[in-house]
Amino acid sequence: MTKPDSHSSDHVYESISFHAMGGPCELKLYAPTRGGVQAGADAAIAEVQRIEKFYSRYRDDSIISAINNAAGKNFIAVDEETAALLDYAHAAFEQSDGLFDITSGVLRGAWDFKSGVLPSQKRVSALRQKVGWQKVEWRPPDIRLQQAGMELDFGGFGKEYAADAAARVCKEQGIEHGLVELGGDIHVIGPHPDGSPWRVGLRDPREPEKAIHIISVRQGGLASSGDYERFMVVEGRRYCHILNPTTGWPVTEALAAVSVLAPLCLIAGTGATVAMLKGEQRGQEWLAALGLPHMWVTSTGELGGSLVAAGR
Image (cartoon, rainbow, N blue to C red; front, top):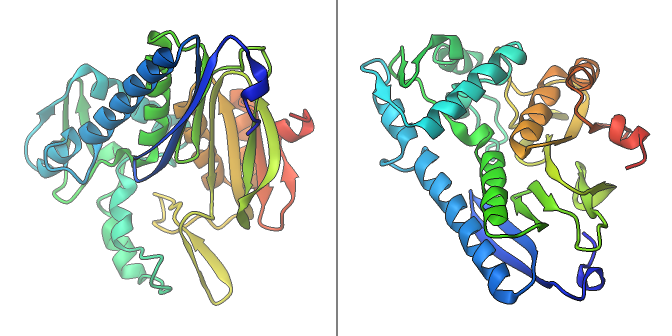
């Protein structure tokens, strides 16, 4: 990203790093005073930690664990925030033709990408029986997973939601210029104080430490999905962590990565994931129909999408 030092003489700038959501996070914030920056950063970090604690499937005291532990048994009543996220998950499931499914996390039980060994179809098929949002009884504010062993997993949109929430509380603290980055998921609060955009590098899926394209962002969410985070290569074929809930197997299309811009990082992240699952042609058409600016990279390194065509 661009160095901020020359962008303002009447604002204090700070870059604050912290660890959350399983990875490195960073806040790049401007405020009239150093105390203002710190107040924004403290509020943002506290909000991210709250969301992580409340929705982590690793914590016994989270709402997700309560729902999952009651699978096949009773209904669980949820709060308004969780209800809103479940409504979003329901809408995303429907609008993605079932490809965005927050019950698909159980499939990770079949896939160990560190092993270099493919799971048996029998194992995948057995777990597939516990996948399907249509098997969830969602009667706001009550929810029940029909089958024992079913699980909800907010991992597919939790970081994106937290990035948006952190940006919101920064604004509530008076921060008008800056950005939030949680493990690569970004919400730009506002441009540099002089009005210039943040320049964000999008990862090269085959050399993730390098940027394959630079885009300018003044406000909103930016998220990427790709086959480079967790994967294994078996007999010359790449199998990545993006699993199709309708088959239980990784995406097989020629796309290596998709990046999406949207008003919210939550929407950008969902769009990028669904586009990867839909594949090059259908994914592009789906994003275009939603009016979401995007960029895609094929497995051979070809770039395309509206962000590239617009020269952003």
